Image 1 (tube, rainbow, N blue to C red):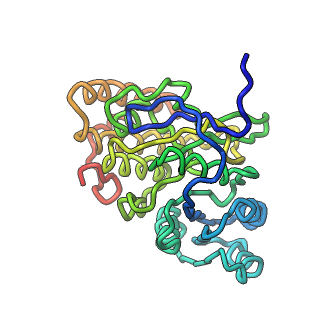
Image 2: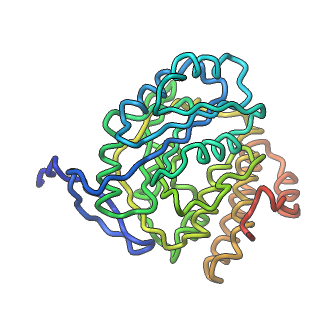
Length: 314
C-alpha cells in the first residue's frame, strides 16, 4: 500500500455531480477569511472548551460570532466575562430560544468574510482543522466544504456524517436531488459555505429539529451545481445521547418529510417519482417505530406546509 504524502490532502471535489478524487497541497494558497457562527443555549458547562478550540484554529482576518438565545444557566454572562475583550469575537444576545434566529444573526455579525463555518455551542473543533480546510478551499475553489464528526456517546465514539462516502455520492443530477433522496449528508459543525452565495436568511426562523437540513436544501436549490469539497477526516467532537425522546424523533421525521415535499418541485420527474416512494415509506416506518400510530403519518401526508418554514417553493 502506498503511503500518502503528509504534505498533501486527498479530497473529493468538483462541481456537482462531477466530483472526483484529487490530491491538493497543504501549502498556503490564496488567503481566505473564515467566520464561525455559534448559537449558544444553556452551554455554560462546555462554552470555554468550545470557544477555546475555535480560537486555536483561527487565522488572520477570521472571526467568531457568539449569539446566545434564551439561556438560563448564565451562558451569556460567562461569554462576556471570558471573551468580551477578545477582538476576534463578537457577542450578541437574543431573548428567544431559537437556534435558527441565532445562526442568522451570527451570519450577519460575521460581516464580509469569505466563508462561513458553523459550530454548535456544545461541539469542539479538532486542533489544526481550519488550516487544512483553508488549504482545501484555496486549492479546489469550492463553494461548499464538509467533513464528518466524531460522535461521543455513553457507549463510545463513532464517526457520523460520512454518508457522502458510504452512499457513494453523487448519484443525482444536482446537489439538491442527492440531499432530498439520499438524506442529509452535511454535519453542521463540519460544514463551511461561501458567504457570497448564502440565500439569506439561510435558516427558517421558528423551525425546530431539522432547521439545518432545510437550510442546506435551500442553499442547494439556489446552487444546484455548486463546487463541493469533501474532506474525509473528522472536523469536531460532539456529544450525543444514546436515544432521544420518541416525540422528538417523530417530529424530526415529520419535518424531513415536509422538507422533501416542499422542495420536490425543483427536481426532474424521475427524481420526483423516486423521492415520492421513499419519503412515504420512510414516514410510515418512523411512525410505527416511534409510537405505533400510523394515523400520525396520515395527518402529516394530508397536511399543508407553512411556507415560512418549509420554503422549497421560493
